[in-house]
Length: 596
Ligand code: ADP
Ligand code: MG
Image (spheres, rainbow, N blue to C red):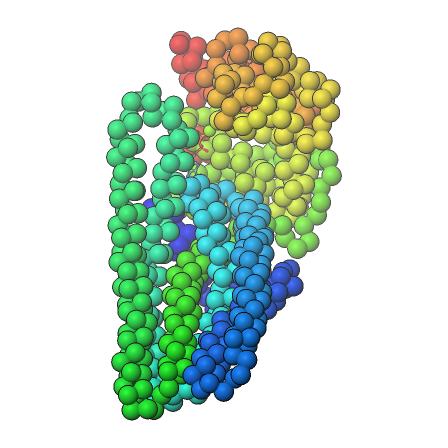
């Protein structure tokens, strides 16, 4: 369902955007490969010219033999044979060039487009990803661009070959017998109308089958990523049913497509055969009436035969065009989505900040939500302060923290960092100053060292070990069979929750930012891990502005200030002792947890 929002956004922009902008964009991908492109077209021209030339050679030979006016007919036939052989060799070489280099041109263009789309994916903000399914986005990057590359390569070549061969063949035919050719010519508009009608149907079916294959990918991605949950709830059957549903929907859309394709291919093939039959019958009659000789009839049939191939190419082109253009539309739909969070033209570059954060009357709501998650909130966090945020689940603690690195922009009010509105500084320099340990730690497939290095890509081995030590991760890493080179599996499945947490803390140590946000997940940890994480956090907090979202209140007794969030905003704040003495929300929460 959600993936449709892209299509919707896309169709809105379709209307707003003149078609020629997309047309220009479509052509722009040829630019770096103009040399290859023209070589490809030149080869296509040679192939068509030779195709047309061969029936003429046949005509020359048969005419000479029939008329008996060549005293060296055998020698001439042999010479002509050798000449035709040379032409065929040239034609084969050109075809091979088109097949190899033309395809490579398409592949390179596909690679450029994939890169562009991937770079665009990196620019799009959280708001976009909240609405998307990863599988769908992957389909656009791989499958759609593949069809596009096929169109880029075959498209111009097919058009050139078809246009040249059909025109050339008709000229030869008209020269041999004008009446018969004009009759054949009548088939063309009929064929075109027929082809256009079924092309439209094919396009519709293709578009829907592309969406459906995206759904399948999204479904597989979701199920496999969550395979542990699936198995623990023994919901394999339910997953199979969901998959079967997506699969059936894809098949249904494919079936529509194949039906239209069958009409399309079958019908056009029949037209081509019909033309041959008309020539044989009417040509036969013309020979009987001595209006046509045998040599011309042979040439005529060969030329009609030549016509079938470009018509088939045209048919293929129809399919290719549909696949490619649908792919291009789906590609552009994403590319045309402007990232809603961007640097302003004169955004300033922050160097290392002191870490003074101020929320001024901030309100925020998620795009599709009715209700503000943060409402009229004002809060000042001084540089170097260690502050804890507490409150019931779902009250907006994570959301509030995600406003500081501008994962989302405030709806009302502003956030100042060292006195600068964070919307006036570059995103990159803002985020470089903030380290975040997220509640659900995400680690990448790879080794432990690679994952820690994510905090500073050019870190030395020594720095990595140093960071791991500070995060209390070194000892458990050394106990693993391959130490820092241990592969941790997809998303770090081979590690425990506490170990993952500590790796993500190490990553932030390495980044060494002046501000940190710690969305604490210690409630999921055993006592020993919790103590290790807690210790590493306190080390990390030293000399930095630290914002901790605390779930277990025992962990934040040392905080310089505790801010309690409630439905109406900040309900109280102060040190642990002050809030206990207040005997209100915090004290209640604390006592409740103390009892457990
Ligand atoms: P907390 O961290 O205090 O438990 P959150 O900040 O995660 O709470 O969530 C606050 C509210 O915002 C919740 O009602 C949640 O449903 C909603 N919310 C969180 N993330 C999103 C999102 N990406 N899109 C829409 N709503 C969200
Ligand atoms: Mg949260």
